[in-house]
Length: 115
Length: 116
Image (cartoon, rainbow over all chains, first blue to last red):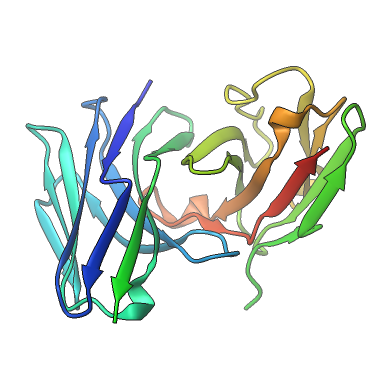
């Protein structure tokens, strides 16, 4: 099955600096890579995703890059703000037929933005 | 509109007791997932329901865990003879499968289970 590794497990940055979180996956058939943000006491919420036919995607201060050859993808947050502080999860998914697919998640990165 | 809701938000039980956790998915979403989130860990897949198809139970850790989805909507996750290692946050997510393959899973707030 799919295995997703995520680094670092914790990350502290000064407000205004950039933050980068990296993930690797094992299943070359995986073709959809979402990133989720989880605030304390809440469920994860999708912030950006990328499909395997795209190398980079950007949404305001957030960008994701994908290298299918190396089987790794990264989340980039620029101009970080205190409200970016949360736990971020990467995930990978592959289609297993009959409309069934699963997301395999990394273990998460706790991001702290220091004012 | 209303998102995914879960109840109870917190559950404290004694070792050996049975517990039931409930999930109300977004109306019209045909796919429903249960995950377990242990402290400092990622989300561990437990079970997946898709319409009237047989559920994918490949993630259930033992036969003490079971889940049902009645009428294609509400789902209940049951843990029998709870053990301390079952303590975790149990998350439910739903997805509109008919919207296509590349679409979002919407998560509920979770149920925090503590087994004493």
